[in-house]
Length: 274
Image (tube, rainbow, N blue to C red; front, side, top):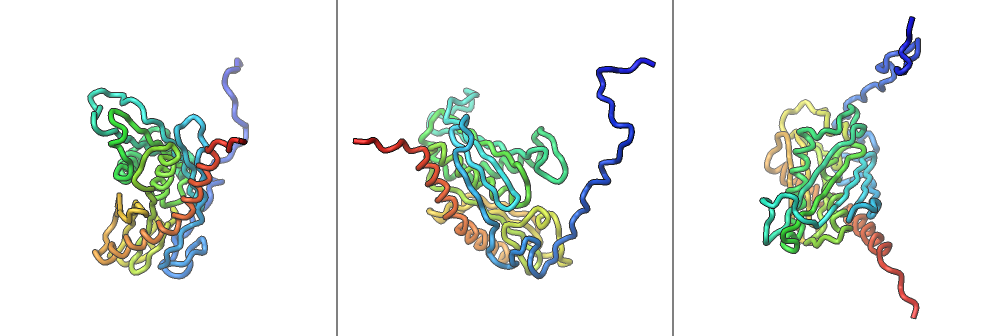
């Protein structure tokens, strides 16, 4: 019987890949310590690692790692606008593109940008645009690309911080850095910088005060540039959540400042010997 020599034949004995899938973790409790050991109802963010200037092909780049959440951002421009009908003679144009790597989530995705990616790109644009001095770059376009390498929760908040660092590393004039922080409300309890499991689970039987909140904050100007919330929360709960996220932004601010200062020192020319 003839055989197909161009086809890679699989093994004669094989097993279903579903046998090796790890069992889903149980839903976190609404009381007691969290799965990673952080306390509830306190402004306790995950340890953050930040590095700037890792991509040599981009004008500016940044990498951020918070727990198991890992993101990379690259900035290109300012350069000429691709479409002449979108050219503004007095103000530049900021474009944002946020995508998830296929291996970033527990369920494998595709490289094609989906509805979630488009929504997050729009939220990222609304958070960054008030901080960029676009009037300094007329008839120009600045592109911000964010790639989520691993999604372990609070991905939009860390994308805002990472993109802001990349803009600063690229030398784009800004009014201030933009920092992001997220929280999850679960009845009378809340968690700051929630993980992927905490974002996608509802452990409380109470239907009210259930939702998530993400705040983009300008620390030096003490202004909020972006706010995104979902679920149902009362006005008092939402106000307290905004204050909690602002406090969380101030906690990561020294880490961001230190990473940016290191990048500037690395890029500075060596002192001349005279």
